[in-house]
Structure formats: C-alpha cells, structure tokens
Amino acid sequence: MTDIDTFNITIIGAGVIGLAIAEELSPHYERVLVVERNISFGQETSSRNSEVIHAGIYYPHGFMKSAFCTDGNQLLYKLCRERNIPYKRIGKLIVATNDEECKKLESIKKHAEGNGVLDLTLLGKKQILTLEPEVIAKAAIFSPSTGIIDSHSLMRSFYVNAESNGAIVAFRSEVTAIYNENGSYELETNRGEYRFRTKLLINCAGLYSDKIAAMAGMNIDHHGYRLHYCKGNYFSASPVPKVHHLIYPVPPDNTVSLGIHATRDLG
Image 1 (cartoon, helix red, strand yellow):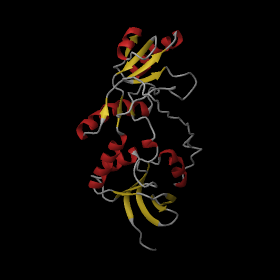
Image 2: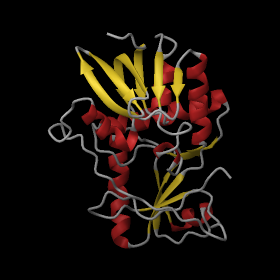
Image 3: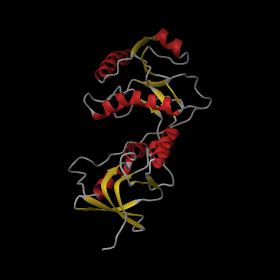
Image 4: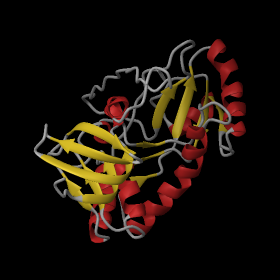
C-alpha cells in the first residue's frame, strides 16, 4: 500500500466554528488540518449574517443552542476586549405596535429568563422615544447584552492563532470522498487531487454538513440530520435610518422567522 499523509485531526470547513475549534485543539495536538473549499476562510455562512451577538432570548429551554448562546454571549465580549476585535454592545429593542403584541412581550421576557437571560427590561412608549425617537411603538423589551461584532476580524484571530500553533489550513480543498476505515478516515479532495488519512474527523461544513455526514457513512435521514434551508434577504436603506439600537418586531406566530428587523453595522 502506498504511504499517504496522516493527520491526527481534520476539520472540514474554515468558517467561524471550524477555525475556533482549530485554535482550541492545535496547542494540544500535533498535525491538525483544516480543509476549506473556498479561496479563504469564512466565505459562506460565517460572513453572510447580521454579525449580531445574541442574548439567547428565543431558544427552547434545555436546548443546547440556548446554553451556547447565553454563555457564549459573555465569552465573546470578553474575547473581543482581550484581542481588540471591533464590537459594539448597542442593545436591542423588541417592539410591539399593537395591543396583541404588547401581551406577548411579558411571555417573551419570562421565556428568556428561563434561559438565563436576566437583564431584559420592559419599556413604555415614552421610554422607547427616549432611546429611539424615530421608532413608533406601544411597548418594547430592551436587551442590553445584544450587540454587533466584526466577524471577519474574529475569524482572522482564530485563523492566525491556529496556524501559529502549528495547524495547517488548506484552501481550495473541497472534500469529494470520505472512506471510513477501521475507526479512521481516508479523505479525498478535489476529486482525487490529494488523498490523506485522519484519526479524527470534525464536520464544520455549515450548510453542507449533512452532505459531508452522508459522505462519511451516516444515514442522515434516519438520524434527522438532513438540513432544510430557510433563506433570508438583506436590504440596505438610503438614507440610513436614524436608529441607535437593533430594532426587532415581536416574532410572528407559526414561523421560524424573527420578522423584518433593522440592524446596524460597525460602520
């Protein structure tokens, strides 16, 4: 058998999650590899978002994402301060424009408190106008721990530190085949251009993670792992709305959307 390169850990995907894992593992393990099909890091989901640091208001109680969001909120602000990553803790208003939506605010606040989000306050019309003179609403929830971040600078920090720790990040390397061999994996990139083995495989392929899982031998339908996409749209406004915080509506019923909302960027 021809000898091929072997790595201890391979991470598929150089988005924010893959790079964060690479930074965390690379000081403790040799031969850590990150493979990314694009020409640089963070070219897909990690750079196609609102760059909001969420507080963890809406996740179901006991849901892992809820704990990740509430704990990660404070950890992310701490990391930004330590590494001089641009961010602003500008806060968010969830605004109610009619009596029915006003009734929902209390239940939203109670649900958030069950997730450990304890800094929300209910605001009346006059308090809203003090914070946001251009916003017309009857009541609102104010979330002071919601903010915005420069996600590219965050990812660059993870990327630089991972490489400094000895990790290899290979761009233009799309995984096109995975073979499970007695507890380890043999991978092929770019349809046979390069083949290598890895002892541990970590799937951080974002919107393609179900395809990678299937490639590795998982029955994604049996395990409920097949992704079902939900597309959002972004629009820029000119002139720029005169808002100082993130402005969200009370979420509509029976939908996965948070509704049409106004976000700011660091510019």
